[in-house]
Image (tube, rainbow, N blue to C red; front, side, top):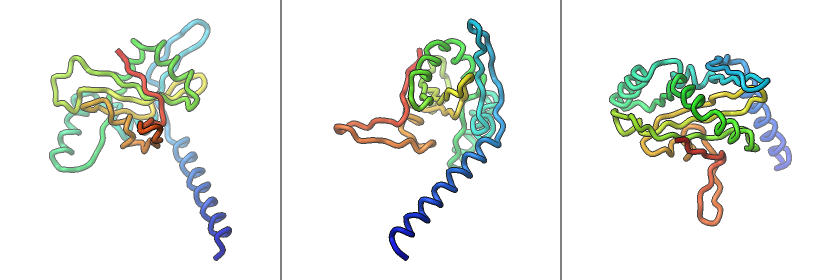
Length: 180
C-alpha cells in the first residue's frame, strides 16, 4: 500500500469519527436550567447530556458526594460533576463576568474555577470547576468537576485538553477564569 493511499484512508477514518461524534452529541438532549431577561434578550443556560446525565448534574450535592465516595472506596475510576443547581447559582452571581469571558473567547468555551469557602467535606471538594460554551443565543454547561486544587479540568484529564509548551510553560487549550 502506498503512503499516499494510507494517508487518505487515515484521513477518511478520522473524518468519519468526527461526523459520528457530532451526530451522537447532537442527538443527546440538553436541559434548560435557567432563563432570565437582560435588556431585550433572554439569557438561557442549558446543561449538556454529558453534564446532567453522565456527571450526575441533576442530582443533589449529598447524592453526588455519596456516589464519589462509594466509587472511591471500591477503587473504581469514576468522575462525578457539580450539581447543576450549584452551577446555576454561580452563573447568576457572576453572569456578566461569565458572559463577557465566553463572548471574547475564540473557541467559545471557557473553564471557570471557584474556590468553595463553605466546604466542610473532604479536600476533594475544595474547588468547583466547570466549562461553559457560548451556543449563540444561549450558554451550555459542557462538564464540571470538584477538585482539591482547582486544576482538574484545567490540566485536561477528563476532557483531554491539548497542552502546548511555550517557553517552558504549559498553556491550556481553553481560557481559565477564576470566580469570587
